[in-house]
Structure formats: C-alpha cells, structure tokens
Image: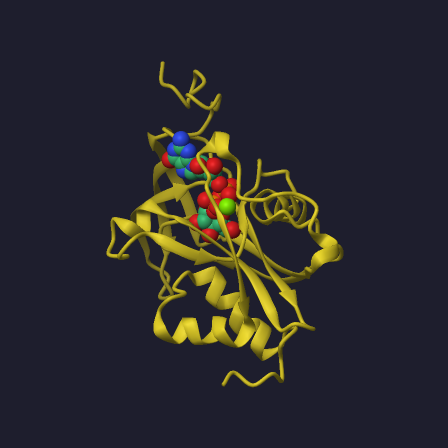
Length: 224
Ligand SMILES: Nc1nc2c(ncn2[C@@H]2O[C@H](COP(=O)(O)OP(=O)(O)O[C@H]3O[C@H](CO)[C@@H](O)[C@H](O)[C@@H]3O)[C@@H](O)[C@H]2O)c(=O)[nH]1
Ligand SMILES: [Mg+2]
C-alpha cells in the first residue's frame, strides 16, 4: 500500500500514479510508465514515454514533473491615478536561491482549489484575500506555462480596475495558512522602473506590467 496511490496521502489524494497514462493528443508520444516520487504537499512524478523524432525513429525518455495544480493572477490597475496595486510577501524558494531577503513584489493570485475550479473564480477569491478588493469585470489576458520543462502549472492572467469603491475587506492573506501579505500601491511608471532595476523580479508580475504598457490599460503612457 502506498499513500497517494492506493491509500489517501496527507491531503486525501489517491491514484496519483495514473496522471498522463491516457494521453492521446499527440500520436508521436506513447506514455509507458508513471512513478509517484512524492506527494507530500505538491506531487512529483517521473514518467517514461516513447517519443518519435522528426526523422521517424523512436527514443525513450524519462521526465520528472512537479505538479502543484494550476494558478491564476491579476493586475489591479487604476488608469485615472495611473497606479497599480501589488503585494509583497516572503518567498522561501527565491530566498534560498539568491534573492537577498526573499521579499517578492507580485501581482496577487494563487492556486486553483482543484482542477474543476474556473481560474476567474479563483483569481477573484485570491484578490480579495490578499488585497481586500472585490473587483468588477475582469479582462482575460493569456494562459501561460511558466516553466514547461519541469513544472506542469499553467497560470491564467487577468486584469481589472480597482479603486476606493472596490475596497471591501482588509486583505493581507490567510493568517491560518501562514500568509502575511503587504499591499503596495505604486505609480505605474515607478513599477516599470522597478523592473529595470531588478526591484521587481517575479515573472508573472513583469509580464502583466509589460502587457499593460504594450496593449493593456496603460498603453500609450510613456514609461519615463
Ligand atoms: N504546508 C505547506 N503549505 C504550503 C506549501 N506550499 C504552499 N503552501 C500554502 O499554500 C498556499 C498557497 O497560496 P496561494 O495564494 O494559493 O498561492 P501562491 O503561493 O500565492 O501562488 C501560486 O500561484 C501563483 C500564480 O498566481 C504562482 O506564480 C506561484 O508560483 C504559486 O504557484 C499558501 O497558503 C501557502 O502557505 C507547502 O509546501 N507546505
Ligand atoms: Mg497568493
């Protein structure tokens, strides 16, 4: 008996070694075996598959995947005041890999509750929890694989307006889940400058700020 396969793991999951076995979308890929390596909080697997090369010959590959589900994130913008609302929180994976203090400036967001939750529903919940703003209409921007060689996560990106009228809660994240999130309002131009200096160095945040400048709510506003 193995937790996560035939008995529930610490998060109640079973059958974790079945993921990927029934894929049929690509005739040049044949999944042979899936091994569960870990299901402590997120799920690590190694999958053996045959892959047909462009010249028609087949090779066998083994690839590890880190599966933590999918995520969603959102840029809060105030086009009148030319500001954005970002979060700041401690991120251990960045801290352990060279970030001076691990305090990352990010657009709010988080993981979907499960694979059936719509990312727009998830992003509204995360934005209220983290910033206190209950947003109106949201604009879908793009869906992105952030690290496709190893991490399965697909992140859905959105944007929405915020202002005094959307502030309904306190924000700051869920204390019972260990979240302690600062809210940071920045002039949009200042946020763009912070990408240049490295003060903002989270991928999703940079992507949304640059999208906003290129073709989003701040298109046409000079970055200087
Ligand atoms: N015990 C435990 N708790 C964890 C662990 N990893 C995360 N958590 C908890 O799980 C929750 C995750 O918070 P979310 O707001 O849902 O996710 P996030 O970490 O902010 O961001 C995720 O989504 C982003 C996309 O918007 C991603 O960019 C980011 O990498 C991450 O996947 C937090 O309460 C955190 O404390 C872990 O290893 N152990
Ligand atoms: Mg979050």
